[in-house]
Length: 120
Image (tube, rainbow, N blue to C red; front, side, top):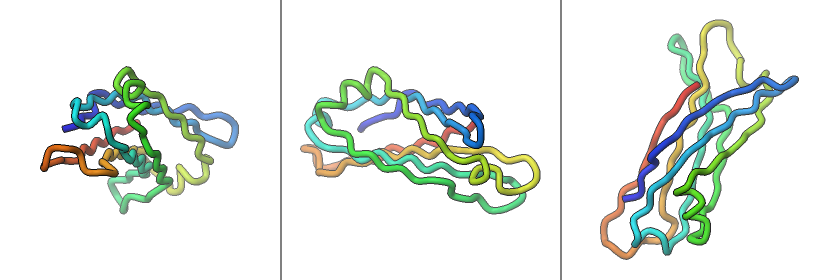
């Protein structure tokens, strides 16, 4: 089963925006390297006193030729306006939920998905 072996999230305010950087590495089994994958990144504002709010959802298709780069380490940057991130008074965190799923069925009959939450 594919694994997200490392994931960290950092944020840097720049003008009216916040640039979120995700550094991540993946580990694919050999039989998983011949298929396309869909990586979904859900940015969520977490507030322990109210419900979580979705900020942004990004999807990316990973091709087999790109998988070696993802195993060595991949960096994503997403610029989000400050007013979309800090919408309420009080202490809040931004989380990003990473979800990696196969688009085609890999050769073995069973396959699980990998899901990781990271916060800043």
